[in-house]
Length: 550
RNA sequence: CUCCCAGUAGCUCAGCUGGAUAGAGCAACGGACUUCUAAUCCGUAGGUCGCAGGUUCGAAUCCUGCCUGGGAGGCCA
Image 1 (tube, rainbow, N blue to C red):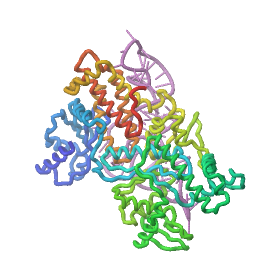
Image 2 (image 1 turned 30 degrees about the vertical axis):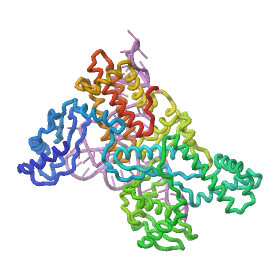
Image 3 (image 1 turned 180 degrees about the vertical axis):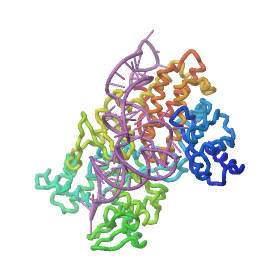
């Protein structure tokens, strides 16, 4: 239809009815109002200025030159300030049904990405503790995003960056050591800003079970590194397990320490120096971030000769591009948003296109229970872990709640609501629609009818408002995927599914599927079965199960 | 002080690359179960889109200023 419009403009120009001009970008969309047709375009209004003519007049010319190529188009109207509204044969969405059945679990896939390599890095929490609510949101968001991009035709890799180096690890080691001493009856103080959580004590207890007092009088560095190595492994295993139970599986677990060990950090620093983006001051090596529009320059190598986290992150991103990713996406918490400009700057400085790096910033999560906000603090160990969350409200509810809001909106997570199995809880609304359909498909006779439906679906039997509204929305899935992928907005899919479920429920309450009318039954069975496929595909993209019974 | 995000119905939020009469869920109120799952549906009510200017055929959407809430501004990560 877009093409038809463009051709109409060209024809109008040829005929001398419009001056020669470039075709502006215009929208072709589904109007909010039903009375405004099935599709509408603002093309005539966009042309008004370059063509120096009234929008409605231009619309007249365009409509005249529009070839009635599509037999589905019943009527074209000019309305309002110059919109061109298209009215289609109301059964047009039904033409998409064979594709839904043929493509089945692949329905909704689009070729937008063209197989480009995309990396989605998310969660990447310090392996010094357990995952909290913020990490959980990142997990749900990142994983859903990756799934959507995969559906949009990208070659997606999910990655977790393990911050197993730097000062915090040192601090972690000191905290472990203090607990180790305490457990074995010696004096020990958790350092300033150290780790006080019970989970740290548990980990050290496990260490003692395995190694006893072997390291009590050992050399300081070997004691600390033994404690750190043991604890990091244990923590990381716990993180992996928790994420797996949350339905998240990574392709790559990437260690920050490995960047230091392999010399990649030094390489990146050297490259920045060679390209002239650094200088020395106060004994430290600085990156000229201000050359890239950033407010302040950034230290790469400290006075003491140790590279900063920023240097490692620069090396990490260089490594991502060296691994051949065409597009790199990071999901970060809002507390890291200040890091974005300098990260893009350093990518630029290293010789890569900063526009191929996107950072999805997600706002923080506030937890509510019994109407009260639950305060969380990682330092004191006062927080709800991912595992506790999954235990309490279940994986499906948790993931849906994290993904139903746009990432840049603060999320109020109501534990009681997520847990409740009532109509207040939006999660079940979608799953219930799926289960309902499965229940219909289990009816005696349904299988036999489905068999016949393979030959002929009798879709022309579908004519009511409820049937057509549902059908209309079902065939939108590919478009929704395209939009969600382009905007990096998984919440679009959550809302879309909610809408489809609503249309299904309305349809269900208005009509019986299996009736005396065999052909009508076949048609309606095809309709609900197509709905089942849409819901299932969408739920899976968001990491939710599509239950057959509830 | 500077920067980022948010401010839309009683509550939680969509809509924001400018489009026609601003939407959904929950809560409230009134209805629908001898039926393929009532975890459902149908209906009613609910709004100065934070405030003030500007840009234009047209602004919740773009620009400027201000107000409120949250976050960031380490040789921490």
